[in-house]
Length: 480
Image (cartoon, rainbow, N blue to C red; front, side, top):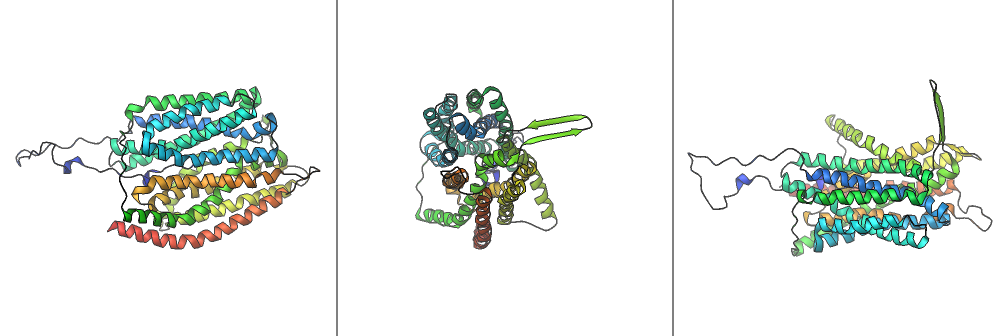
């Protein structure tokens, strides 16, 4: 699932109008104390619910379209498997390079609200074009969808944070709760669509199935637009940066560069769930599930791309569980630094290609049990919970206030770079010679992945040590 902006990374609003003079410069008699400032509500502002439901519908649209895209290209449009994998990863890369453009347009020209609205309109059109079964229409649609999805990414969560800063100043806990619910909206949307879209595709065909993401995105746009009067008031400013600020920016980027490079390795493994993992499941896994419990019989064969829903399901359960576990460890005197959590995340990432190798060897001449796929999605989701939100929060902690949005875009860029890498790497999984024989066996392919992750795991240990020292020094300086 995509990374999001957590509350701890957002700039805090200034509290307390009681410390400011009155507008007319009046003084207050000691016998008549000044009136108490109006109490700040501890309820979520109305705008939150427009963000929540709009994001749920938009993510439901995106992940639903993405869930069936690979098999649509190979089975309906007759793409060669390597070509389909290449274009799928190129599309995902576009979705994560576009946030740089989205942040620039919003900060310099349109503001966040109008950037979201204006790019949501072609986003709806791009989904509608997917209904037409044509290679050329698909190419145009994916370009539009990458721009729409990517431009929206860095703006909607930031606008929500600004709304809390303006309307609920000082309510840090309330804002944190809002971002937790926002993250749930993302994963509830993806869970619904990843489960339902393959089923809908099997019932009505892929082209008609693409009507559902179109309707959902149109609904998301309508919900978001209706909430305009409840959002933060935006003021575009372009202050000049001092030489000291510029130096601090480059220093922060340098500290984070090594961390971001290794996070890219994680995303390169994770983002294959829609490509090579689907191919592996179709070719090497028995997707039939049958059992009889007290007379209740269940017998169903699942589509190979339907198991993507497991990621969203596990996020919804593991994220709150991880919060409880880390809080329990802290109470017992074991406090894990962000880099410690990420190191553990790389360990779980390493398990993923190992499980693929074991599943392939277990299958032999037949097919492996689908429990392997469940275990793979469980491990990659544990890694996601430990690396993605923690890494984003760490980036905010390490970045100066003046470039937090830029660092957010850089973090999202790691997903785009990983997808570009996958556009080159993943086609080799299905590439064959002139006789139709695989050039690379699944075991060899995933063993190579395990080696790369093992190197990243070791490298992260050495990169994290100086990073932790620099971060501790920065925090001490800010504390004084």
